[in-house]
Amino acid sequence: MAASLLKPADRRPEGRERDRQVPSRGMLFTVFAAGIGGTLQYGLNLTTVNAATVSVQNFINETWTERYGTQVESNFIAIIWSFIVTAHFVGGLMGSLIAGPMAIKYGRRNSLLLSNIFILVAALLMGLSKIAKSFEMIIVGRIFSGINSGVALNIHPMYLGESATKQFRGSVTLSFAPFTAAGLILGQTVGLREVLGSDERWPLLLSSCAAPALLQLMILPWFPESPRYLLIDKGDKYLCLEAMRRFHGNIDLTDEMEEMLEEKRASEGQKSKNLWELFRDASVRRQLIIVFVLSSAIELCGNDAMYFYTTYVLRAAGIPEKKIQYAAIGTGICEFMTSLSSNIFIDRIGRKVPLMLGYGLMVVWGSVFTVSLCLQNKFSWMPYVSMICLFASILSFGIGPAGVTFLLPTEIFDQNSRPVAYMLNGSLLWINLLLVGMIFPLFVSGLGPFCCVPFICVSFLSVLFIGFFVPETKGKTLMEISQEFQKRNFKEVGQNMLREQVKEL
Image (cartoon, rainbow, N blue to C red):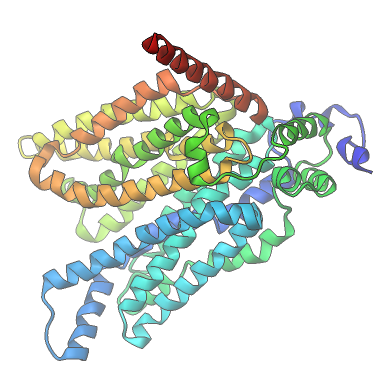
């Protein structure tokens, strides 16, 4: 029975995986089912809160006045608002920390489904906050929405990466990036004053995250669990084969199955690692360095800081105040278009090229942007240069850093290390996101037009690091990548031991 599942029902050329130009229909449907309630929520919750800024701040003022009979100072409102914004990041860190254990215990697909509980609780709290006259409910709701985003950013790419075949692993896994950008655009669109961004409808805006969650809860259960999880973690070969057939259709799966069985034999007697065990494991030392650097660089490169300047640059370019919210949607469209393009070509050009090109172009556009800020008041056309740099930098970020950073942990870690590696990857992202949020205002006040220089330096150093230390993984099986890293890691261990012996002599 198992052997019959491995072989295609017919021998027509189109039945072979290598002849396919796009992933199977089942895989494409899975991409949509995972994405709609996965990283789309991350982008959605980042932008809906921005659209509700003024309305929520007015609500805080009205609530405080009604409770205590005194007008609240603007500084206090700003502090409460900062709690609302950062609560999402704190929740994201919490979600990243529980994502690894969830993926191990419940599986990849089921963890995505369970994470919807957090977002539904968040939607309920934020949606009822105005009726309950409690801005504290918004803060708690933002923590729950952050937990959902933290889980999704880790498990969404892990689920797709473990379910895809070698030929389409890059494009299938990287599909989470266009969904993130789509969430940004969706949040910016529903946040328009004419839609849900008004003073009367902002509770609906903040609770709109319930819609994608409910949609995923209806469709994702119809799709199977990750085949690698079923075989290597659960030891169920038949369910693994059935899942592969449902994902990939009528193709010969013998090679894929043999590669997974080889990895299962290599990990026989081992269990999924925890964070301490991962740090102590010499066989993943190089991978840990790569994850640490790239997951930090994705925030420290300053892409989110560029979003901070969007309103300022568009206003300086002469765009009317009432039209700025429409023009700002262009930033989300930019990231969506480039992440979609990168998604299409990733399996042809590899992983290193988009990463190096993305960070390299961010160095260029960040430098020109710095010059334009210095000359902002000297030339009437300089604000337009700033606007071009702003959009070009966001485009550059979408080429590689936005997506490939979350693809690599799937490829460079084995099955036992992957969940905790994603936990580390996601945790570093949220920590650095909090760090940038705290230090960037200090850069603006202290460095003025040179506030982006630290981010430019990080992008430049990232290009060098990727060029010298990150290997290309395109076209290789996960087992081949693991073996390649194992050779490099133990070669370094052997060299270090030799140096110590020489010192002792």
